[in-house]
Amino acid sequence: MFPIVAHEELAPKVHRMSVKAPIVAEKSKPGQFVILIVDEKGERVPFTISGWDASKGTVDFVYIEVGKTTCRLGSLKPGDQLAHFVGPLGKPAEIDHYGHVLAVASGYGASAILPVLKALKEKENRITTILQAPDRERAFGCAELEEVSDRLVLAIGTPGEDMTVSATRLLRKLLANHPQNPIHRVIVMGSLCLMRVISEMTRPYAIKTMVHLTPLMVDGTGMCGACRLSVKGNNRFACVHGPEFDGHEVDGWDVLMARRCTYADESVLQQSFQCR
Ligand code: FES
Image 1 (tube, rainbow, N blue to C red):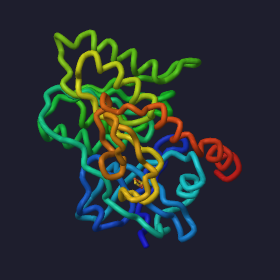
Image 2 (image 1 turned 60 degrees about the vertical axis):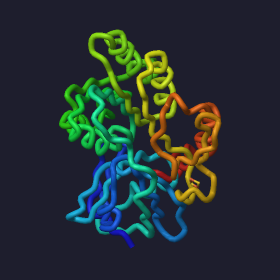
Image 3 (image 1 turned 90 degrees about the vertical axis):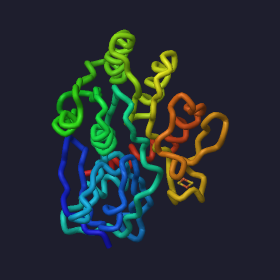
Image 4 (image 1 turned 180 degrees about the vertical axis):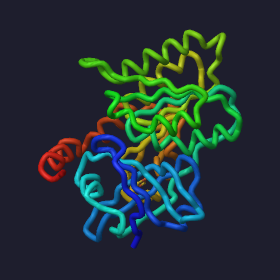
């Protein structure tokens, strides 16, 4: 069993959970994920690792209450235990000295991107971060992002406007400045829509754009095929070949988005009837 050592609400329906899992904590690297099962009858659900402390043996992840398992997680308290907590899974993110790195994050990505940015900062990259959120109340993680960024810009959606628009508007300005203030690498973590749009925007500039894909997963070890996606015409499994991919090489965005929504209606129903 894996005890919960801390659990806090970062924004409405957004939580950070810290779990005692010393072996996972010892081996975690930026960009990797865990799969947990709440109890013996629970489903397997993947979460990107947002932090760890090897000396305390703890691993953190951030989740948003959207379905049965995440609502169940939301009801747990420090001292409660998770039945299974497997990881670290997936390939670590590519970390090197690139120069000027632009990070774009939304939703859970605001916290999940932190280990990647910390590692990039240690490699002396200059980091500009765009944090996209629907409103100020849901713009969580600003202080931590500020610590690892040379510049943090908030893209807050205005009423009636798709949130992606405000982030892409900021990106368009930065790209217009690209010759004078070059961007050497882009990293996007958040909604599939955001990752797809940003990848298309940077393609004409040939700026390497890494996206962190989280399709449906079951085993997390490359055996079941649930997380397959198409990259340069080849089948790839996000759990073992990713979750980080070159966004310009992902060529199955429509399929990816359709499969991601397979259980969306059920999740909304479960949320209506079962969440606190
Ligand atoms: Fe089964 Fe990736 S989750 S192959």
